[in-house]
Image (tube, rainbow, N blue to C red; front, side):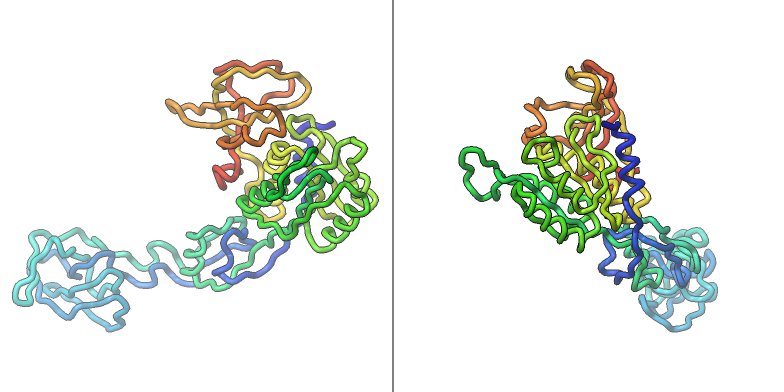
Length: 403
């Protein structure tokens, strides 16, 4: 049994290498940039008006009006002192103009502009290259692309981007006793909550799942499923059947297919029987415990960091915060406990509320939680007011949950 720190390090060291692909700009959201993006022009590409108003030259208070300059106007207009041109927001500033008078600070009478006080030189003008210079780096490789990044890339002249491909993911849930969610359970059966839980957790983390299947606790069925999925995906995640029971066939079946495990147990609660290895082609393989809370914790602590590293993200370690417990908690030494908590701010201090729970199968205890607090493996008890490290779920904190 190894520590969570050693387990995560092994997972990240065996995540596999990201692959570079090209995607159209309109499809690039959520991918990670593989190369820097440089602007091919100055931005703005010309001196443009930041306001609707009048372009003037100098600080005179009376100006003869010329024709209006609209956005997109390509005429060459030159202003001399004593002349003014009505101008729209985004329109090119005429040659000779050095400031824009806003409409509210002016009045027009018989084609003459009158102002009470001239604005400072440069007022209301966006100068060429003010935001970005030609050849300037506007987006760095490793950036996970959000909406604003795609807008910047478009302004920089990009129609296609080099990105890291997202790993193809296969999910397998196991258990002869597990039935579909819409079925009515009979004695000894339970509904499959793990599949929608994992599917949603990974999708919200930015990694849509490619293949899903449920398998009975049958070595032949498991072997056929694992063989098929390992051939056509990059990461295999199996939930259930990984412990030491007489019907837990997942480890032996995976080993028969050449998967070499790096560890089989982690000193943590929940999620002690956690398997991780690589198949002969280097594909990462996870074997998660069957209890739903253990599944949720394992996805957050190990699977998402691996997928983020594999997808080229700069941040794939959980960002650590610190907060005060609002209640007591007792534990046995020897394993680190992930406490599902509701983290909230009170008087500039993070507070950690730990809902009561009946164990690692009590998914209802997670209904409002947004974070996991870490109770040290050597601790025997925690008191209200004790400070614990914690980190947010990706689904509640997004990119801020990773550093």
